[in-house]
Amino acid sequence: MQCKQKETNTKKIPRWFAKFILQQTQNKPNNQQIFLALLKPMTPQEWCLIWMPIIHPGVELPQEGGRNPTGYMKACLTTLSALTGYHERTVEGWFYGKPYHYSVEILLRCFHLIFTLQQYLG
Image (tube, rainbow, N blue to C red; front, side):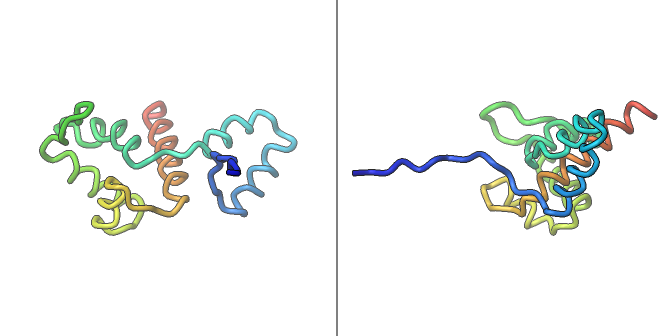
C-alpha cells in the first residue's frame, strides 16, 4: 500500500520579516496588500526578463525555447551579482538549476518593487 504525500507550495521567509509584516498589517489593513506583494517570490529569470530591457536597453531578450542572445546572460549575471552581492559564478548556477537561498527571491521582489516605484516617481 502506498501513501500519498501532500505536496505543499510554501515559501520560507525569515522570522523577523514575518513578525514585522504581522505587526504592520494587524491594525493597518491598507498595508497588507503591500507586504503580501513582498512575499511573492521572484526568480532570477523572471527578474531579468522584466528589467534587462530597461537597465541594458541594447541587450536583446531571449525567445521562448531559443538560445540566449549574445550579451543577455552576461548582463543578467553582472546586474544580479551587483544587486545580491553573490559572485557571478554563483548567480550563473541559478540559471542552470543550482539551488539558492530562499531570501534571494524575496530580495529580487523588493528590488522589482523599488525599481517600479522609482519609475513612477522619476
